[in-house]
Amino acid sequence: MTYLEKEQDFEKLIAKGDVLVDFFATWCGPCKMLSPVLEELSDHFERVKVVKVDIDQFEDLTRRHGIMSVPTMEVYKDGKLVKKEAGYRDYETIASWFLR
Image (cartoon, rainbow, N blue to C red; front, side, top):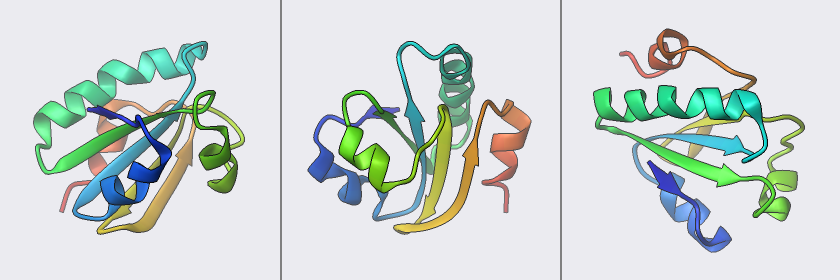
């Protein structure tokens, strides 16, 4: 998993391949529950890059992406947004987004 450190890196991180972006907050209970699920996902799907974005650290990016609640996950394929889901999801649900 990669934690976004600089906002200008966001576009580069989502540009290639399958990327799951997790918009989260450190104070959010469901976000804390989701973290080990995303760890497991990144272990089982090596081709999927997981990028975590702290909404309190990146308020402008969060606003531009229309994030109204956390956790919210966005799925990108080669830089194109293909799915957006708000709320906790279990491993099987998230894994199904990447099964081909």
